[in-house]
Amino acid sequence: MKKVLILLAGYPATGKSFLCNKILAKYPEFQVVSQDTMKEELFDEYGFNNLEEKVKIEQMSWQKYYETIDNKMEKSEMIISDYPFSDKQKGTLDDLSKKHDYRVLTIRLIGDIPTLYQRSIQRDNDSSRHLSHMVSCYHKGDVLEDRTKGDCFVTFEIFKDRCENKGYDKFQLGELIEIDVTDYSKIDYDKILSDISKFID
Image 1 (spheres, one colour):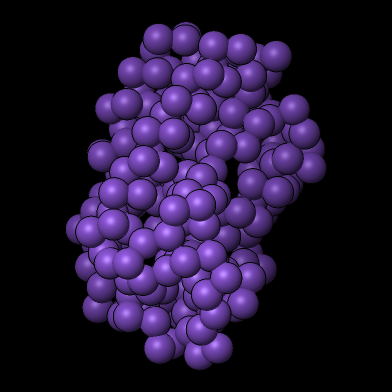
Image 2 (cartoon, one colour):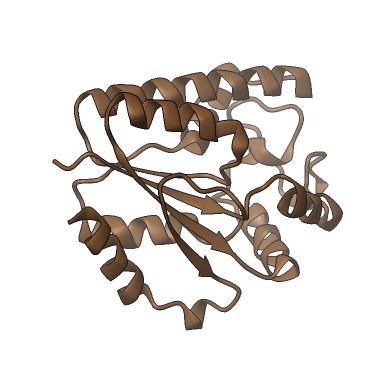
């Protein structure tokens, strides 16, 4: 095993999970550590009645996330993780990487913000998307037929503000590959996988 951490970063709704699966198809030895998955599992386990309780569970998920990264690095496993990373996570991830002598590759996905917002709406309206993301009160088994009725549904103004002001488009730890995903048909996945191969080797 090579001590490598790949961070799929950048704006929301840029197809990080899709790219992750592309990478895993070529490198199945990578272990996926997903903060979103951990958060959703905790939301199912505990549920929340308001935003304050939701935030507390989110904080629990970050603690679990870092502990998982630490444990996998302790075992020298190859790790891949996706999130709209920012400076909030950079310090801890940098410390863990240095502690375990890991090489880090950031793949930063960017694009036209209005286009990405439309993709985010499609994603949030999909029944496969965990309902907890769209509501301020959730318990496992809850159903909302019209996802747009969720009281935490992100407006374009909020989405644009997050993209422009949270530093998603500037995050970098280790080496960087930046990809514009505005037009999926123009993405050269073969080149991306080739660049990843060069980094790993």
